[in-house]
Length: 241
Image 1: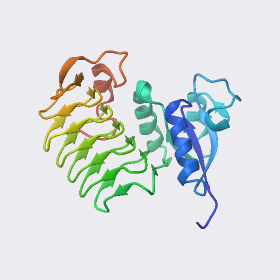
Image 2: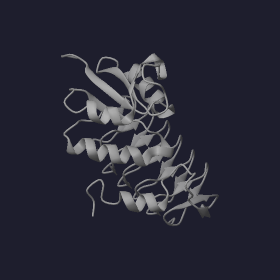
Image 3: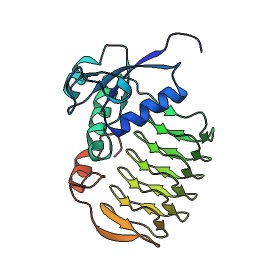
Image 4: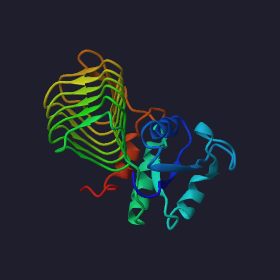
């Protein structure tokens, strides 16, 4: 690889940051040099995941990163993914660029479109004409088949299989082993339990599980997807109508 590695600042220092840094060490050590983390829980100057330093709070990172020449990776995790959405919009408006950590051992169709700040692990398959939004995470063994549409701020757990023409809207979290029937839709802010089988459309803002997957209850403020009130507040933040 020609040229110097790109400096990278990571926002968040929890589990999402840890797996992202591991991905960098595994596949991108010649492309990125991790400067450290911005995080609101760990003390400034302490060691974050893999020993990289905590550079400051999130607000300090917002103030310091524009103009630094560093790229950004947002790794706030599922419980605070709404904050990653806010930071994404703010940094995009300021002209910052985001790391896309797509493992070279993933199989991504040349006709697929994947947004910024992606974290895609080895063994993931993304098929023909699939369209995937920003802040996407796909764990090992995930399949996103042809002509699927996946929104922004979506996490697909290990072994998720989306059949062709499935639609996953913004702010969804599909648990390990979830699968879908072709042409089904999971509406915004919905989460599925492990092993769920989606054979009919799921409504927004619910926890669904089972074979077939059905609504178990509404999303609360303690769940790993944004509460419907937060989803409403974030509407339009990525530029959609």
